[in-house]
Length: 373
Length: 142
Ligand SMILES: [Zn+2]
Image 1 (cartoon, each protein chain N blue to C red):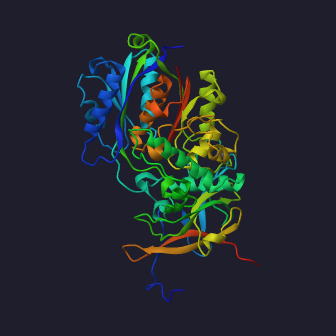
Image 2: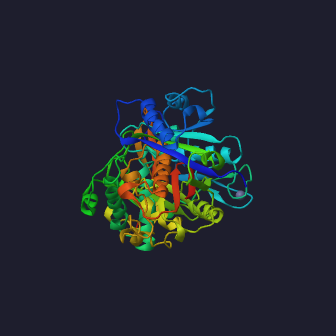
Image 3: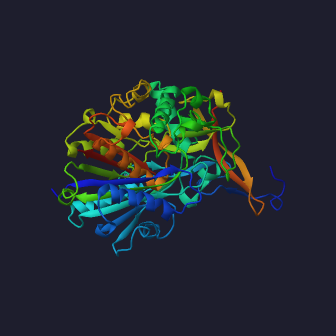
């Protein structure tokens, strides 16, 4: 067993539309906030990992360089919407292995407006030409299947977005800080049935930063650390006869993380899940074990994932309301769970939260992380 | 339908679809000689048993609707005008194919309905050729 890993500092640049700000400026705000939160200076950071997707060559140095040029190794990490959580895992792996005592992650993205095309990358192909490679459509195909198999209703999915926006009101860093009703959502523009516009995460500009430390180093700064306890990443696994579009083996990764963390889904106090589209929360409360398969719709609809519910999910507004600057999202999830476990989440606070679980998915891979205080 | 070969415009398949044109159109997939697994699109290495060098096969032109969505919003760069039905078709070989439905009332689509492959012209390319694509439609009675 190697060194335990502590989330020593977290910081965000508020999420939203920032067309006039460079990625360096966004990153600087998040990074300085995280360093201040950790109580460390940049010159003490031994390695940097930058999660981003489309910010081009050298984005790692362009962002870290805003707060210092100390000659440390900086690695760019791309895993689509899960880039900065994977960056944090790589930093944590290095700390466990004894390579570093202090490492830092910056997650960054400035996005074009409009719908994300899902598959095929630059190669395109018939799916792009025929309008099939549409991210909301991929979620919609799974949603329709879920409705068919389990009787899930559109309202069930939509309620995840109602809840997300209600939580966003309580988060000063959220892109949307405005509550919307179930009717607003159901009546908003239909994108791909059953998913409406207000059930799609927005395109967002923003940055997140996380300072990770070995436990022995962290003890110099804090008496009551939040541990990044266990983590597992994965890619889609070929299963004969399986046709679902999956970003990764969510259930297998969750089982692995629960086993190593020594707690189960019933013990999780607060969670972050990848709600790029509202059905995502319904699928994930099942796959992460918070409720039985097929019951995710009513589980969410009846309020079990609200702050104050059985398992509060996406207390900061989630991707739907906090916003989803793809490379920065993982770091924002870590930020929220760290604040929750420290009892610093203000009006969003889940009382007495001691354990947390996070799921961040991107095309090409999934990360599941458990946190403990 | 063409009169003379010289005036007939050439038909070409849409890129990436592995679509066989002609009298008996079909999607071309792979079959593993080792374990019998089928794949679409075709591939070189079997994902089930890792055998290399799979056989090229024409896949069934009939299948069932596994899931669908009605796209209500168009995307730039596509050849589709909303609303259109995006479908996942399950072929008897155990292969899922992403496609679009045609000749169908979007409101009458239901999971499990039997479907058949059809070839349609999608667009004309820069050399004047007809770019052909595949869609699926409900199997007609009788
Ligand atoms: Zn095989």
